[in-house]
Length: 366
Ligand SMILES: [Zn+2]
Image 1 (cartoon, rainbow, N blue to C red):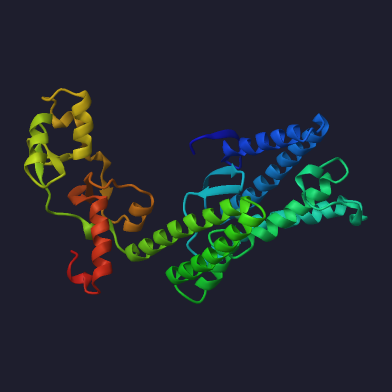
Image 2: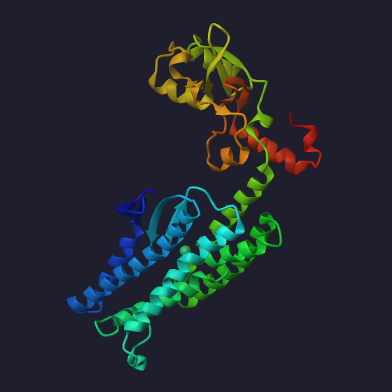
């Protein structure tokens, strides 16, 4: 992720800190200095933030290690001021797996809270409530206990896509389809998000960020779920385009540009003298080549070679979610090593539109 500092890895998962986390540290420094605090007091606050950071990291590793046990790899972990983010390579398919992975994070915080409770002296009434100006050697562990209790409980609020919302969706998926479950979980999440934003205006501005985060990521994730459901069970072979325009590999940059201006095609298959497809070329690649290359450069030098083809049995869902295709750039689809046609993202988007438009879509596709 851009603007993140790599700090190390554990269990083959790289951990990054987002730059905004350092704003938080600077803010505490600034607050401490402006309130005339001693260096020791400011030091305790920073130590406290680092301890909270560590607890958030443990929370994320709760998700990651639970995921690894179920066979899901994690790309990386990013720590943001509002919490952590574990990016899995693939989202869990079964509700039971999603439930286990989602609940493992908050459970770690509740576990830390219980462990801290064991080492904190039991005259709890002496301790102040959670306020940033009060951290010191005496209340440090108690405040950390409170933070972990809060992190555990807060994350279990059923506001999708927070952990609790995922647990809620997984639970709903036991009874209804994933698409419907996501819709309901997102709607409930949005209600919580609005409540967070309103509370944030009056009490703690952090809640505004969390509310906005919930709204944006919920709508993003529900559209992915909707599209995945529409593409479920379809393969690249079904959508392959058999009609596409051809250009010879010796066609020059200038001639190819003319072809684009002269017709409706925005991408072409490039063929060799033996009339076999050896690559593809799109308007975008042509335009960027025009900036740096000679007008008489042949397409064979700038095309995407067809070695980057995809097999016809690859699920459309994977092509879409893993962002393998560009909008215009054609990618050859092969069957038993032979090219049977072309596919691009535009093609998949058209398919989604047609499938949404008519229940008789089966009569339209191959
Ligand atoms: Zn979590």
